[in-house]
Image 1 (cartoon, rainbow, N blue to C red):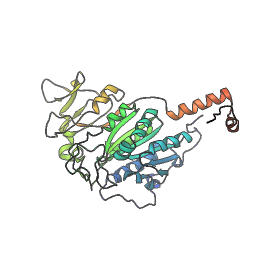
Image 2 (tube, rainbow, N blue to C red):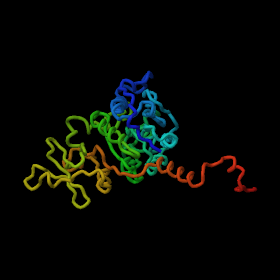
Image 3 (tube, rainbow, N blue to C red):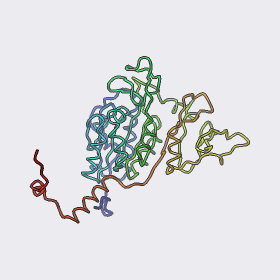
Image 4 (cartoon, one colour):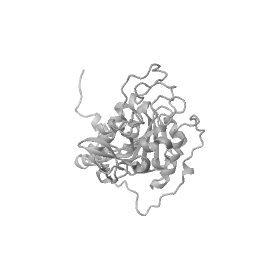
Length: 348
């Protein structure tokens, strides 16, 4: 089955404006979802996909209103089950470009099982995981990514649960593309979205997204001018890991332990820094564990953003369809009536 666009077929061109639906957007003023919607609408026209072949599937939550605001095919589906429905959509019509829009509560709580098995199976779909570390639609309960000590409507004395790490969880499920970006950095988000869309397999893209009502400013430390250079580390393929004002700090590996080095020191240089390789699973695993609980400390590791890991692996829908074709060539086209009337019966 040839799923590629034929060379002689000219793709109908469209712009970001053609992706804007006629629906009134019902997100709170200042919500990070607006930025994500804008960047998705900006990126998609350049991907070389027919507009009629683009599908958005969402679960339940503030993020899951997304399909209403995209002038494409889509479905606002079931809580935590967007991954399963999207898998079915991709299997039924593999040429479709399928986007899954979900939140940290939708995908990592009730949808956790479906989420990890999507990554394990590796259909060629794109996951946008909006992470605001809170349940927004149901008015401010703590979510699986809420940090310890966070005061919410359902944890008035502070969260005692240990938070999920979405990227570490994804690597544990053998995801073939793992990335992180931010709602307040449009250019970086466009880069990550483009890389994810072009990856053949499941692209899991975590997006730090601000909830101005129930968890305002949770990620501002990574985007505010005063703190961004010290707290955010932007991964570039084949480039050394550096950060700080004028990139005066670097990260090196001492065995498998990351350490911060001062590049202004006479004993250290950029040649000592860790070089980013997104195909290195071990280093990607270490990157997902960078934390920054104390942003005032120069010794604290910054939070990485970019493409953590990617790997080539066969897509689920290709394996299933190839298996069907092999069995059909061996046994012929099946006959449902003959199957129903066959000898495999049981008496109870």
